[in-house]
Amino acid sequence: MVSLVIINYNGEKLLKECLDSIFALDYKEPEVIFIDNASTDGSVKFVVAHYPKVRVFANKNNSGYAGAANQAIEVSGGEFLMLLNPDIVFEKDYVKILVRRLKEDEKIGAIIGKLRKYDFASPDRAKSKTKLIDSAGLVMYRNRRCVDRGQGEEDFGQFDLAQEVFGVTGACPLYRKKALLDCKVRGEIFDNGFFMYKEDVDISWRLRLFGWKCFYEPAALVYHGRGTGVFNRSTALEVAKNRSGLSEFQRYFSYKNERLMRVKNEMWPNVAHDFFPIIWKEILMFGWAILREQFLFKSFGKFLLQLPGALLKRREIMRRKIAPASQMQKWFAR
Image 1 (cartoon, rainbow, N blue to C red):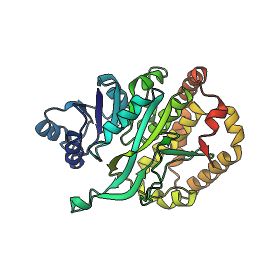
Image 2: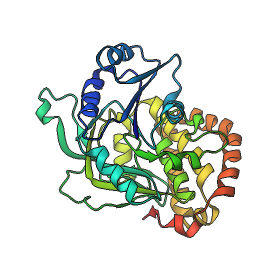
Image 3: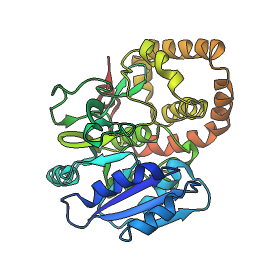
């Protein structure tokens, strides 16, 4: 069985397209779960009123994406688990194609299809499905900046090769639950200390360290609204140019969590190999914080407070890892 779990916070206006596309899937009877993180917009009432087949969990407090993802693992019954943002709209064969690939290779722990941009603002629903790529899997650069492959490019078939990737984006990944349970560290699978942002990169990194594959299957097509926008982020200049589209809240958590993730998952030989790209990125980020985003110093302070817990998790991860440094190094591109 496949469990599809929507993690929602004030996403009522997105839910009809998402849920209608779920119930139009040609996959037999998936388990559909809705976890709401204390929304105030009527999301829970809407789902209860219009989708009686959905199991609803209305949390009294916002536990963040990480907390809700761990909750999803506990309450779901499927062998495979898909975590969904509410701004996802499926093509009907998306789940079937991904499940087939997972059954063909027992070492795939996480898989994603080709994500294109869905334009929820378009008044013409026929034009909502665009040809702009949202994600073709995650790529990690030598400076440890992780981005969605192809994001912002028009889809001309340049990402039509099914292949392993560093990791899978968190919008609608399909996980083998056995792999997620194998990655539990100090009682957590997704890191509750993250709250939100970078959890997808963190779990992808840990899956690889523990010997699991992350895979991209372009034959499976899905559409993603992505409230932060679809931009080309392949260079540092492009990242800087588009940072204004992110809220201070998002940048605060992204900065902190990226560094926690690296503390937990880095291997010293690979740090030495990529020392100069890594340190140059940190110097640029420090200068940017001084000039443009002084609130990031608060984020760094929070990182220091969470550092002892991250080091304890690192100790267990390094003790249990399977992949050698040389195998991990090949996933740090350019």
